[in-house]
Length: 387
Image (cartoon, rainbow, N blue to C red):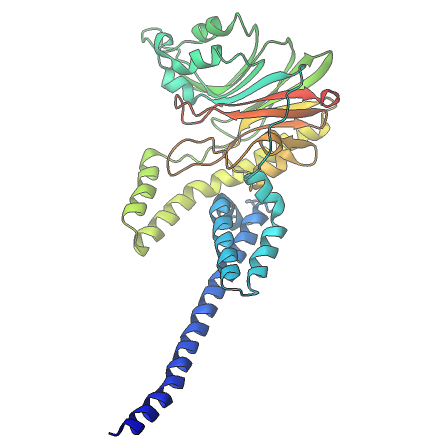
């Protein structure tokens, strides 16, 4: 073949190569765009968990649990299309804007505010049965609470042993330890089995004028209302523990194993098993949240509400309780993701402090002490006029 013929052959193959590359590029872009659209659909599905009751449609609740991860994926697509100079970035941008409220509650970024001189410190803490009734002398949870210097303390999974023959933590020992700083308490035990108790408790430096109990369906979980007087004003303190997901150590191990050995058959098996556990819990929490919301709505007094909701901000239970009347203290003055459940693969913000419009929240703090499977959370509360 002559030089002229080779040059002619090379020049004729160039357009073919460019055409082939162009087709691959188009296919790749459309595949990524399709994945982007699927991620946006998941984002909207998760966002809808705020308003759709799990009793009517369960799927959004599952997506709501994964909301933070979905947001990060959509942001990833946004940055990808910006880098590629494609207008497709607008799809992700608009979807994130439409889900702004959920994003702001999940990832708040607040600057520090000066705490008014006239304020109170409130704590919410799932104490995990005081590390399963560990004796008083060794009980780090109890010692932590006694040294917290909070004005009001709301405890969930509050429990003690009634077995006099064993050296487990007793009710009298708890009260003795806290009595000097917290002379007033409101304890509700929902379950008593084989010398073991399970309930909620509120301890206060302020006198408790009235003790109420919110009746709802649950074997172990409960919510109480303590009416106290702060700065001459009657205030209702809600201490809420909503239905747990009842995940056992075996269930958690199953999820961890998927991380190390991922295959479709195991995923389907795990999804079916977890759905049988999570579904009924979501439905029960929805009903419990509605009953709590009804009590909030009819309250004639300002409200401070604490609790382990066993649910994230993008959930029906959380938003039903929060409603129009309450504000989330973490969203108001917290920073970042702020998970309160401290297991590695289950890092969710499920413990919350809320308040009615008469108050403002300052200095929200999540203490990463590992005495329980939940972190204690605190914030300072001041009257609106103090800001």
